[in-house]
Image 1 (spheres, rainbow, N blue to C red):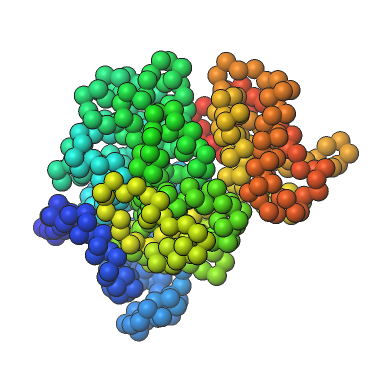
Image 2: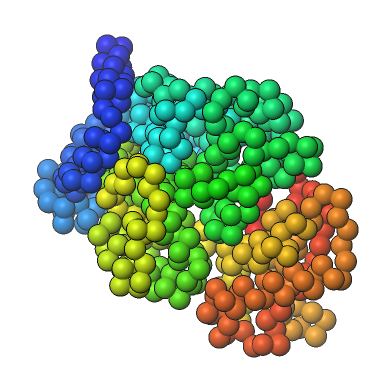
Length: 500
């Protein structure tokens, strides 16, 4: 019991006493490889499951002395590590009771997984929220209402977000939390009654849900622009057209400072976060797909965030999958999370952009806020959300842009399902089922306009599509459904953009 108290007090004191700028300056200058090695040493001596994992691989922990040695360590995965050992054995000293909270992953790729943590594990994640609230929203000097719109319950998003934002309030930020979860009626009520009492209001939630809530609020007469709305997203890749669209509907005037996306997982909390700099860079690349393709190696635009390498240490494999190491209720070393992406150093990113005629530091209106030389990590959407059509990978991110064009976006919710089908002559075609907005009816004119918009954006953004798919098969077949269609868009169910 005393060790738990000491662990909490030490972590809390460090969090409360360390200013954000000092923490991030330290992150940019310390030896993160050495810290990763030290984490390995601590886990190899205190976590029974990892000790057994190394033993079965015939690895002697004391021989892992250099970073090259560290890189030779076997990868841990859900199947070979997390599901292979009892939950308690994955925790320090084999004691589940050293953690005080358990979250559950969504189970989107299989059986739900349990993730224990102790309150001290939340402070490193709270710094990611602090980065967003302070450097993006200026919440260190503005009274802020934070409205948690993530689902509440055993799932990781809502409760983790609430805990981290309360830690910011404890640190002295003038932030007040309220947790309506994903109940739109409650969200509308608390915003209309409480937001006028604060200088700004932050909505935190999954991108499609926040858009739906904002659109539904507009139909009910809510003037979002009255409340100085800021937005925090997590869980999905979205386009810069989508950010602009949602920003316009809440009265945003500065997209680089009015929203931020978190790269988070149930496995280890928030791994990185968008910054005004990363958003500025991403918006430039969204308008220059050829340059983006050179940088990222693909025809789709990934999420681009900066991260603290002392908190979550990233590596990449030759096939483009990401690994990370980090301390948590279940500490993880070289964990294969099945995300595809890459790492770019701060200097490398700025050099590449300057060589291609763009200076993000000059383009970004910093509003006298600090810009930190933190590394970048980029993350694509999960590959199982793509479809293969004439050998071309069609990504949801490409289709989203077609639905977010000015002439289309007022008709649709942004949700769709794409799949490759065959007609009665066994010819393949790209089918896209699109959800209409409320009180709209399907028409051939709307179908044609949507097909043309998606076709145009696929040709612009996806070179495989433009070169692999014969012109006569390029135009998608659009099917329009009513809002909340039970087959394709059931209410209250996590949305899937593809069907195999």
